[in-house]
Image (cartoon, rainbow, N blue to C red; front, side):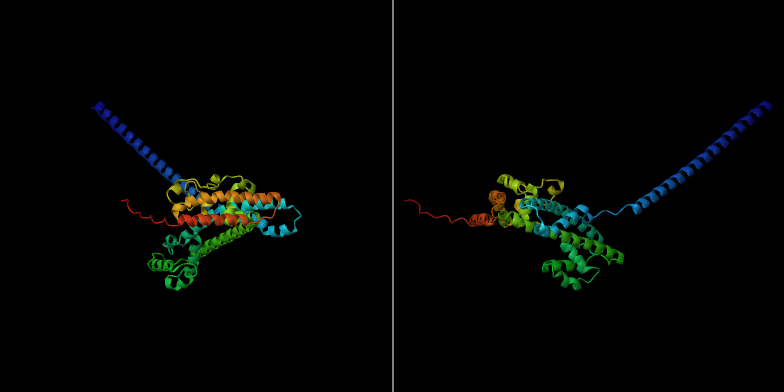
Length: 361
């Protein structure tokens, strides 16, 4: 009995020891879990603090208008008029300098167009809480900015009709008035209105710089290539000259290549119909001139070929006058333009009625 009792006591003691070990292991697990959770909390809080610190210390994104190269270029074109009068450089050196200014102006204009689209998106995001439907009604950045200036925080759209009448037609005003009276937007706070005003002011600054560069390019093109300007217009002529790299290079390009000069290749955006630039095959910058755009769509391809042929001749006429030092004249360009307009008028004439002949007896 004593042996049996001793054996039973030993078994009970072993069971007690096992339970003590299990309790200790459970306590250790709880301590580890608590330690891990606290460490994880500390780590996540540290990460959040580090993200906030990065957001606070991250420098503001640099604007394109503050770019040093753009500012230097604007300074150069503003001083170009006075330098043309007072400089002692030869005429050829002045022309070469103006070529470079025109090429750089075209590059800056392309960058400014991208910056305008970006600023327009920021303004839409800032004003969306007040009038979310306005973005779809006025896709033009300048018109949208002007409408935001007029409407502001006003909820009664009838009070803004007089201001909208200065730059919108009656159909647009009616559509905006109806959408504004049923909009789901709400008035903005003072801080939000200040942000909207900052974005609108930035768009105005971009448009002002674009106008200055365009005016400079067009005024110089009238002097450098008068025949080309008379044929396709100063704006299109300036873009073609910038793409070719100069008047000498433009005069060497055959007519078939002038049609596709500046062509934008298709990408996923353009294939989806979301691109603002035309990506039609075998058409470049020259297809945007008024001679081609005024034609019906079924004649535009034919008109583009005719304009490209005369464009090659006009560029050669201007280059010969520059190279030989002869007086530059727009007479050739005007003559070519008149010939093309006569051709287009004939193409648009209706077909003559078929003459009915009597049947033979």
